[in-house]
Length: 121
Image 1 (spheres, rainbow, N blue to C red):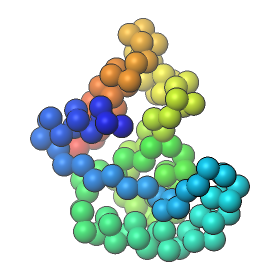
Image 2: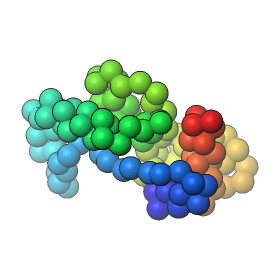
Image 3: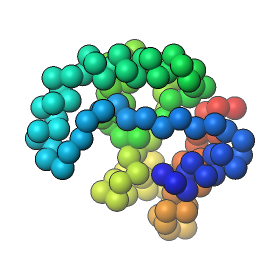
Image 4: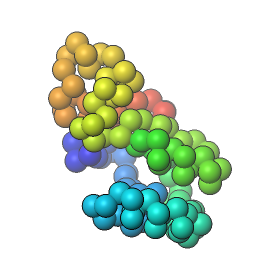
């Protein structure tokens, strides 16, 4: 994420990072139950954040973020695989060029930045 943000900022773009789930602990079961029970509050926080920031594009990293944004009816979202190590396969499927040049953190950040900039322009 750090490399991606640096690439976008270096190209003159402002970045606002947030998370659809406002609560997380190591135990996914507890986190998921809590998040499901507070989805309306999370959505309201996100709507307020979006209203303040007025983003040109909303980048959803992973299916969970995509579901949340679609459930909220948000427009102009760009869905990309989560940047976690467990999503490398999905990242390479989305950006097949990474299979040839290597799915390093630097190359992934370059591909994501290129995709985001293309959406903005």
